[in-house]
Length: 114
Image (cartoon, rainbow, N blue to C red):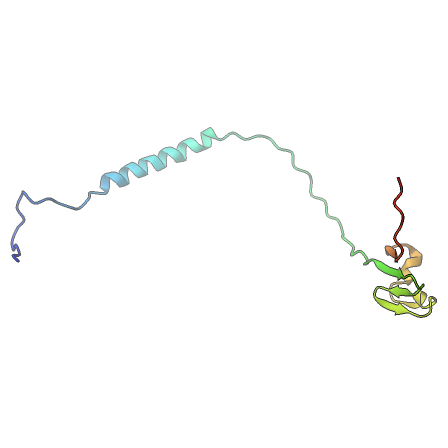
């Protein structure tokens, strides 16, 4: 194996790429795009709705009262022996005011009507 020491001869191939012209072209293209994009884009007038500030109130959860075939009454999943207890349950006081949705469930299937 021989190793050349000294200046390279003119016949040797230079394998390095000159990137200066590439950078120049890219900068020119960047400037052209920066100038032409605002001209090309057109704006369409859009009327957006005005912002309204509303105070959101938390809604009470549904009260579920179920009755099975035997006539047992359930508050959610808890069996109630005395129906009068429904008046003293938490959340039952709002039933009279009408702000809490009340869901009544029955175990009997209802006949389909036409």
